[in-house]
Image (cartoon, rainbow, N blue to C red; front, side, top):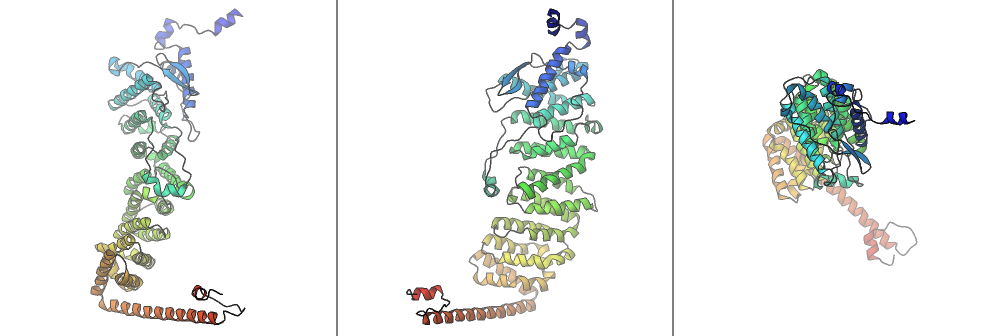
Length: 523
């Protein structure tokens, strides 16, 4: 019995064992490894998709035994097991070159310990040591002069994953309509852990950009699962984090060609969920910025896959109410497609007309601005295919009582290319928009809109006086007919009112207007 108890006690390692394993005992290393695994579990190491990184739990035993953190003490804080205190490891300049890789790995393991940053009074010393260690390994990566080995890449990705991949928390927003219009006015939520997260992001960025990172080797660890979890973080409310994510993902797209189709498809899926399910995502603008650069690099002729992406994902992004948050980036992507392939202009313009706002004037002004950019890249043949429905909508904008909408529509004639397209097709376009122009010139309440309308009328009258006079004559005829119909309608109602007043005393049901009721309160 006593022998069994003694066997359970930890034994002091022998000197030969210390020399052979770098001064770290197996039991000590295993104790740290188990505590570190507990840390990873408590910090949502695999919270996003449930998939684990290949090779994370199959680290060489000799490597595990060489990864001791000095004086690790585990303590319970808020129900989570975290490292309460540890000491900083020596600087890289204080060790020989042969030991620098092992020291680098040991420093990476220190940085795997995640602290609670919601309470600035907790673990102040340990947090400072970790931040200093992060800065040291970042400098080491920048000055590295040899390819990173597989073991090092594995530990690098593990450390980055432990620190970055976490459950994003946000303040509850119950009113989706309020969110759509007021999101720009809200203060962004800043992550309290950002002083450490920023260094981790900078470290990852330098790893991806480093010439010492072998893409063929690194892709085993910076894999599809890693990319998906990185994309999940784009929903962070901290704009500083989204800016780093944008840069990191763009570098990954550039370095790992094998991941490019997967990244495009994953972004596609984020857009689908945003458009058709949630209408809530913080990183749409940043994802569109990445895509703008990607689209700019598409080879010609465009693949069918890219055209489908335009029609199925980018154009429907005009639907959500919160489009002001990302419209500038979306407009750039759309215009890039039209500049790449002018035949897409018809599909784009009809897509804009499909999602054209009816009651949102500020959104309508944005659509008119985007429309101008698209039309500037549109050629005559594509313009003629869609000009009839297009100028029906522009005509409605011209007659809008909201002066900014009418003014923005009239500004289209300030663009030389658009004005040329309109002049070449004036026989079709002028009859469509002439009633709106004439009503604006005669009765619009805003002087600026009236002045711009007169300028546009003059352009048409100078270009084709006969067509202008013909449209004016038809407009006056239509107005006369409309006035005649209006007079007949008023006369009919007046006759009905008189009949109702004459039969007011009878029980016979009659049609009585409010005016007749006012004159005959006894009814």
